[in-house]
Image (cartoon, rainbow, N blue to C red; front, side, top):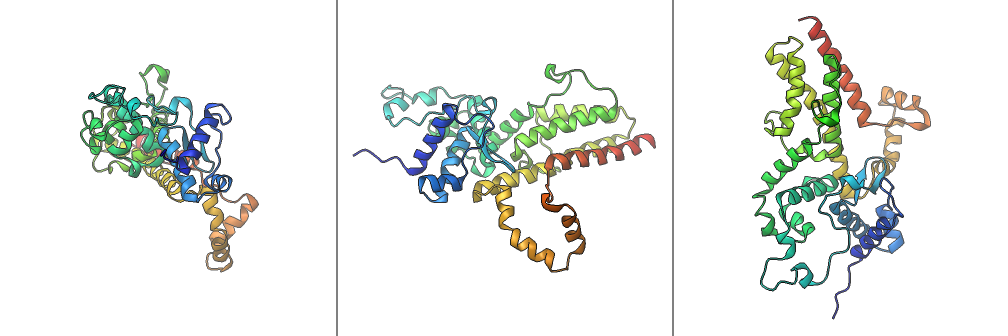
Amino acid sequence: MAQLTPPYARIAADLRRRIAEGEFAPGDRVPSTRQLAREWNVALATATRALTALRQEGLVRARPRVGTVVAPRSRRPPSADYSAPSADPAAAAGGAAGGRPRADRELSQERVVGVAVGIADAEGLAALNMRSVAARLGAATMAAYRYVHSKDELVLLMADTVFGELRLPPHPAAGPAPEGWRARLELGARALWRVHRDHPWLAQIGPLTRPLLLPNLLTYSEWMLGTLDGCGLAPATALDLNALLYSHVLGLALQRERETAAESSTGLTEDAWMAQQAATLASLTASGAYPTFTRLLDSLGDDGYDLRLDGLFETGLAAMLDGVSRLVEGR
């Protein structure tokens, strides 16, 4: 007797088809979990599982304050096959009796790492394990271990891979190096922020006190330290300032990672969650116990306060570089 396709898989297949046919273009918002639950008459957990499957494939991604959107084609794992998984065991095995499955034979460390990055980008590191990576590749779990020996090793390979997205001179895509120490530090910090913004899980993989000795991350540090060293600062001061600028990016990236994890676990976007807190917020502001907080919120009118991490990054970077300027001028 043929197995029935589970509801979440039917929902995922429908969304997959609509994306492939161009109904949803890259950047377009796909139906929310609540919309899918109503449309398909399923539980929220079932709708959430469908979107989770598409996130693991790299087809969609969570975007703070927007929801779940179709991922850019350039950001999807190169190994991704967005068609529904084959139900034919012979196809998975490549039709070769007694041989390794075709998917196993086609594996490489690059493919394993690429799929792992896609899973972590969509769901966070908590959703990442060797079994989930192998399942996405259509391979046996032990086959993935031939290329990566442990999850810890996999995470380090993932980190070095995405830090390779940094574009700093003399990289050809970076353009000419800017003049002046401030412009050079801004270039480096913004490049690092873009990488963390695209891969929020990076903020989880190591404390500041145990720096990651990864070639592509050291390329960033070389750029920043070379700039600070050229300002005539003491060696310890240059190292401290590099750590402070890095921690500024790390702290904000951690908040983005937590938002991604919260949306994945609750099915609620940031705006939807805030809407649920409206009654509590109104009660607190009406109590009279927090006059400054209430006055500032009231002054913003109906638009309210929009906490933007990109804006906080720029504000914090400017303040930190103003402090560096005083050190440089007073040396």
